[in-house]
Length: 176
Image 1 (spheres, helix red, strand yellow):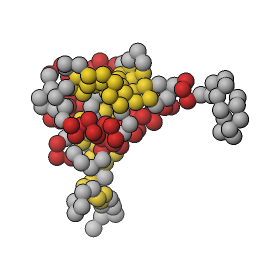
Image 2 (image 1 turned 90 degrees about the horizontal axis):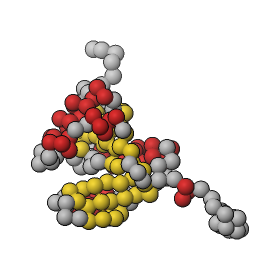
Image 3 (image 1 turned 45 degrees about the horizontal axis):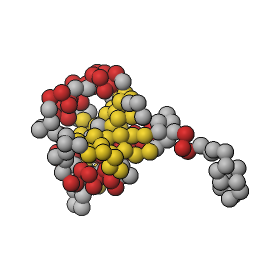
Image 4 (image 1 turned 30 degrees about the vertical axis):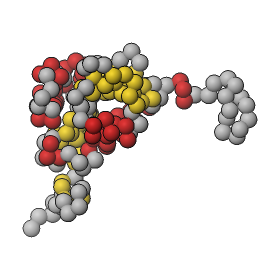
């Protein structure tokens, strides 16, 4: 018998239990493991898609890992002219459907709001499954552009549109 408590069981899909996961910010030391996760999550993506160094240097990544340190899901972003360019959520295939992607997106959006980032943009390959488009639409991402190669989605999260401007109506209904 040991005094160490067993890991808490968290319930995902009906009848399925999985170990609790932890969320953390990724660093340069995680680049190789993040690339491996991306290759597993999107095996048909071009090799250049998985290159992490530039993303981590000019943005960052959030990682969700189990209690043993295995990366289950990740989300990366980098600065762009209008805000942050966000990449697709990369989740190990056997861990999909447990809400990890939504958790990562919510945390990233909160960080963007704190940093006063006006827009998050997300580019999906044109051959993205309809489920992926629906997934991001449920989180408020709207289609802004469609080309022969990709679908561009955007979501306004922060920036000056949140501040009161002259002539606007305040919460009491009085003109400013």
